[in-house]
Image (cartoon, rainbow, N blue to C red):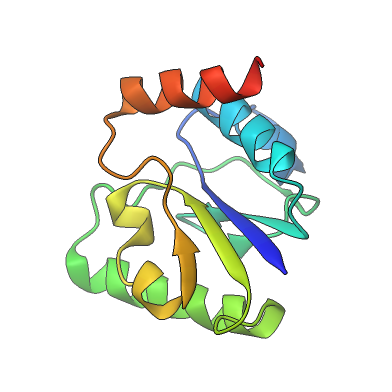
Length: 137
């Protein structure tokens, strides 16, 4: 099974809606487009507040990020996220594509046997350019 994991973003619609529609940034729209182009079996969102989230789930907008959390909280978040991922996927056999920054994938990618991070090392502007090039072909 192929699974794409997309990081949440700060900019959100101001009302309850499906997760795939909640995040309202250019980066997220291109990441979603790229994820779908990979023809995955599943796509999940890595939410700073809710952990591993199904894109069809409805949630309220929130203001939370991993960027200002201490390492101990990020480790707890990642551990809980991995538990959820293990319940929904096979972390030893499935192939994972991670579209997320270092803080969101820290303590995560080492536990996934088949994992690619196509934008690893790219700054946000470079990521946007990379995603856009793959979504407008």
